[in-house]
Length: 258
Image 1 (cartoon, rainbow, N blue to C red):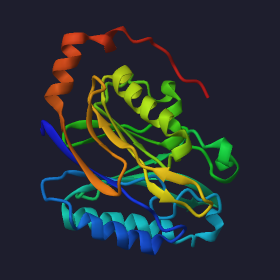
Image 2: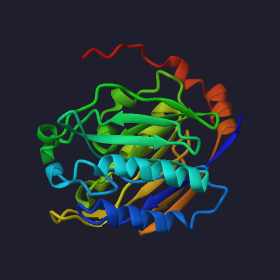
Image 3: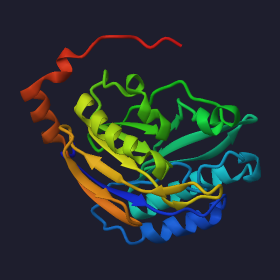
Image 4: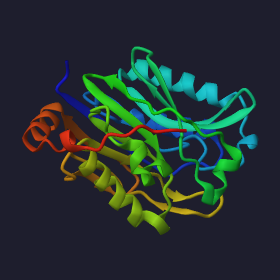
């Protein structure tokens, strides 16, 4: 079992509603990532930007992107994770995919659709939390607005890593910075947040602030530029800190209903 997990966070501008251009752009960036990296994290809706017009995206693009992720993961021997617009059974989803080099596929549909932008009227919300294992680490992925709801991410399962992929605008970036750090501290888990930069097709501006925090909320990576960030997660750091401080043993017990 691995004791470390090497991650790369791709903080990038996005081509508005153009999956083919975004796939090409991200593939070029991925080509520059060193061999030692185990997991590549992409932003929310990384092939389109945060569009509320999914009907304008070809229905086949979702499957094309999943196939692209599988191909890249296999050829680069690295796992990929990120969310995309996905159409299924007549519904649209803001769906996150994790793809391992061996072809393992994990799926999470965004639980908290962003009502301020009308996402709840366009995309069907998920209702199932996802936790999966990769290289000895238990990982819980979530999407953007989920960050504002601590009960949904509460670490009742003893996961090791919490990942948020996002299109979080500049005007509310203070909340992003504050809540990412809080989620790491309260859950005693590594917390990773990957945001985009640039301006989208409806003139919202994004300034990154992608970051990695350890289980005590100490920053391991942070950027406001278009770049790839790197960090190494250490399983021993998790185990030692939890054993020493034992905060998770005092957590409240509860069940989610509905």
